[in-house]
Length: 299
Image 1: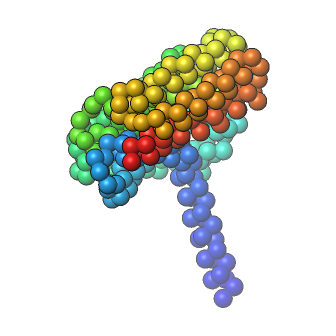
Image 2 (image 1 turned 45 degrees about the vertical axis):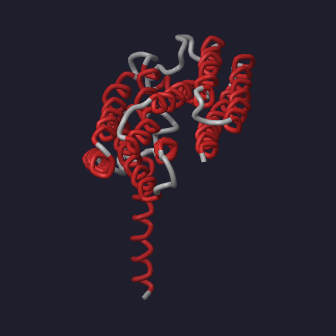
Image 3 (image 1 turned 90 degrees about the horizontal axis):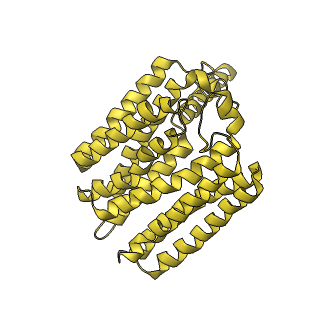
């Protein structure tokens, strides 16, 4: 009896460890942001009542496509992940997972995600999803060690999820879809540069060049955050300016935008990791607040 109990416990522990490895492989938290953005795009495009089955499917498709892209990213960067403290314990650098297994998972998820977009929604959404996956994995990822322009390049596939959600619902790329894309595109710069500031030493060890100035953690790098947020705020207000949304979302977006800008200014004046972490957490607040405000104001 004791042996059976021990055997069952061992299986459960192995399954738990394997699930934890897959969670790391797909970068679960990052993937969750993408799923959220795709869902927001889908909801904003909906003409009437929420189609819960469609919302679930767009979330699932977004998870598979993004998980595939992130898995391919980790496969390509396996040897570099060994050099960084924040990534050294991932399943590939530690050999807890083979490259073949990771490739198989990436392939299955990529095919499943694009198949769902094509069959449950439309071919245009599937095409955008495929372009997002391929450009993130095979253009952005290798470019990270060549030039800091990689952040700009990576922001393009990173901004496509809300557009995919919109296109999945409507079947077309409209002005509203471009606005949603632009909001997430501009948001990614202060978001990612704050992360790159905090993890600068790690990234440098792996040869990644991600901060906007060649000097790295400088006042010039911090200034770029202010510039992009100054563009981000009016772009986020375009749905109100163009009459797609009302005053409630506009006021909330303006307030959260001002707070985000103040955090960027704090990094500019202090130039330290504490201010960079505050900006990073501020970015995690900004995007959900903006999209949720747009959705609820629409309702």
